[in-house]
Length: 379
Ligand SMILES: [Zn+2]
Image (cartoon, rainbow, N blue to C red; front, top):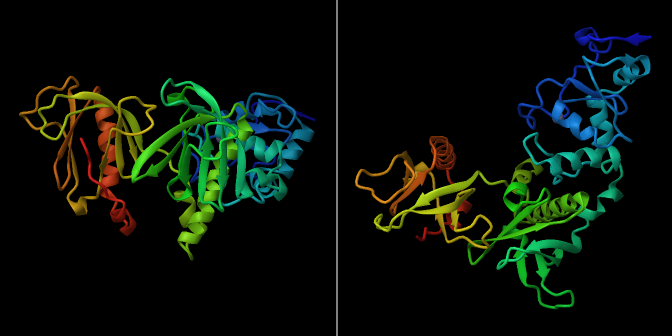
């Protein structure tokens, strides 16, 4: 028997299996996830268009077909009826560690592709021993690290040790003293392919003397890169389990790594507001607004702490009337208990996005531990 299109909702198995997105609703976001028009006829799962493109990259594991536009034979229909997304999840995701990053549809291609390969090609979540590269509590290897002075990427040895509570890297292979010791306590990692100019580019941040330091790394192998990322998450998870005994996995997992709330260029002036405006790269990371001369600088020129409205922090569109010296016309004023910070955006859209990002932080009440990390802006 051969089914010819369009059969859409008249699929014989649609009564039993709803074509749910590959990801759970809380993790999915438009435009990819709403209507899965594709199916992997070898794995027996429905996928959205974005994921179908990634499935095409592993043809020995997954063969994708359009639900509407292609001809299906009986055995394919039967597999879809026998498997389906929920049973596939039960099989291929049975032992996903709590710390393991489950990508959203808006995440970079590297994360989304490796999530598919980890489940369906390497069967990593059916066999715990395959998780050793990120769950062992120790990881050692080489990464390409961007040099601070010339911007060239150089091979550097990295060691992540949960026992030592740190990620370290060494400038020379036989060096005994690490070039940097990054405490797991303040470590963060976020993929930034566009900014770094590499599809596997990872930004690692940590605090030294309570100011943020950046390093930029990549590995030429996509699995290795994602393994490093998840090893860092595992280390953070185990650290937080000790630091917050009794906290649930659901409470800890969002704290493992975080992406920046917003990044981009704005102009800023100094505390007197007469210093003139200079273009700087800004990163909003949780409650820290940092600015850099170059997006890939190792450390910020300054950091502004953004508290909550209960602590008299406010964000306003526009600049005070007497302000001079800006080149961009879309102003933002942040009022803190100590002073006003003035910024200018190039476009109205940027101004709107920045205000929305500041507003989200200001609307969120401060947690007690955030007071301990409070620091004053320096301009
Ligand atoms: Zn998808």
